[in-house]
Image 1 (cartoon, rainbow, N blue to C red):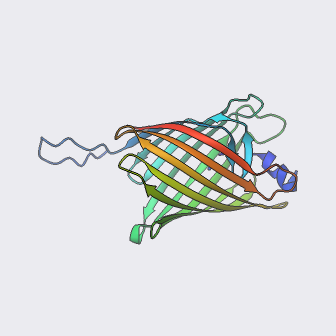
Image 2 (cartoon, rainbow, N blue to C red; image 1 turned 180 degrees about the horizontal axis):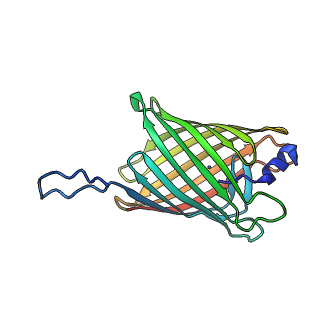
Image 3 (cartoon, rainbow, N blue to C red; image 1 turned 180 degrees about the vertical axis):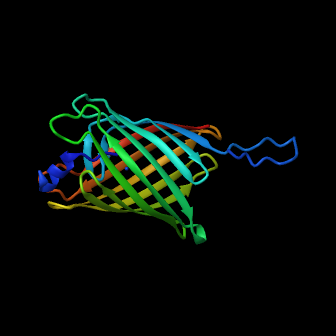
Length: 233
């Protein structure tokens, strides 16, 4: 995930209770989980805009009940691009019929950024998640209080099971970014990921992605591949 003043320039203004049974024989379930992810992306594209030619993007996420928090890193292979470290936290509220509200915030940081650009931006978000038949829907609103940009985004997903270990996961995204000053832009994308469960806790995922935008004078039409390893404790 990434948003800096470079984006605004492109827009012409320049992402423990254990509840144990009394029975001694049953082990208590953990009240939290930790997920670590080690993906590589041949391009780093955020909201339709490319920010690196290739990047290693590890992350750690802690979940406890409906609360979650994590750290996400994008370390570009080409040193001509910026290192990004994002910190986020959120909480989910269950609604009826499997729908839920997701609210939280992300702090985007760029430790090596110079030249008068923001080294950190703060973006709260609110989302509605659920399913319409076999199609999943994620509708989100983001507002970056540092860059004064409102982003609205819709993502639809569809999964085709192959067997007990793998599936074909399709996604389509459409979004609109509107700064308080200057012109906004529309972005869209398609994705296919294929996860393969090595064990109950470990998964390898390969993927192919496409994204574009309507920003005049800025390259679009991005294709890239991803490969990652995920482990949940």
